[in-house]
Image 1 (spheres, helix red, strand yellow):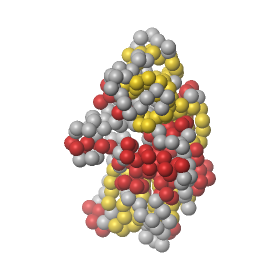
Image 2 (tube, rainbow, N blue to C red):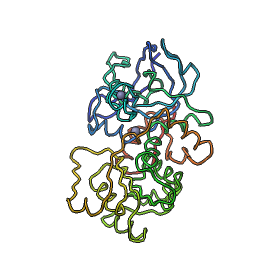
Image 3 (cartoon, rainbow, N blue to C red):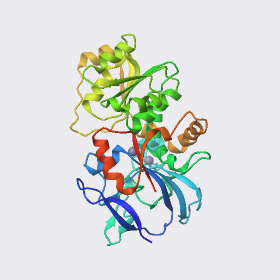
Image 4 (cartoon, rainbow, N blue to C red):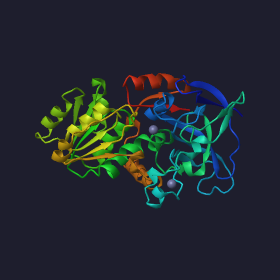
Length: 360
Ligand SMILES: [Zn+2]
Ligand SMILES: [Zn+2]
């Protein structure tokens, strides 16, 4: 039976909401019905070519749903189970995996080259970032499916698969924020809001949210920000003023632009940590002079998928949800249908809102 899906026909082309046919799951595969899928900035980056996967593709990589059927050899989930999608499954055998750094797995996106479905007209489709979550149903490798721990609402659980793992991991694994530290978060979209919540959970004392839009202040404060700065050329000076002229212990950049990476760096105290979570293009050149690198003694680090091992971290996040420390619903700024995705992309380009959640 055909299901509806959001298909990217070619790089730069608008998304098409169309009907697709999925096969029954083969060995090592799982078929599931999506409950919800978050609209992530990386989906937009795939449509404009900043990030590339084989097309035509069904986009969507942040999802949760219910298992419909499993193929031969799949034992960790069964029909009826609630699951979260992991778009970067680790192969377990590459150099990064052998070091335990599964978020850097060299083969994580191999599945993107597969044909996982066809349009009803017979056009072969690739699964975007492995999981093709912008569809009523999908077929994925079993390694892309994680059992959802008890007590987490299924629709909101979609956000765990990308925004929340990334934001939590940026604070917990990459920057290793300690209680009492000061944190600045640049960008108050889905990942930025998740990062603010993670900073609050980590016990950060002062949490400064920075965004170009003054309209996101309430969202940011609800997520844990103690201060809100509307981004401008003087942002680093404002942040130093808020932190006894020192700058913050930790800056997390969730935008992926040279100007915000520079601002995050300049807002960090001498000896502090700057973590770049945002995914920018090659044209975003960031420059540093040799003297400032020495003088400031800061650490600048990249952060991939929050440096998370989803199988290890998901139960921890579920614990935070159950105790109310992590509020998934507060990250969602609108609940939309599949055909609302193009408008959600436009909002994202305009820097509006937090997370749009497609609810099926
Ligand atoms: Zn994402
Ligand atoms: Zn690997």
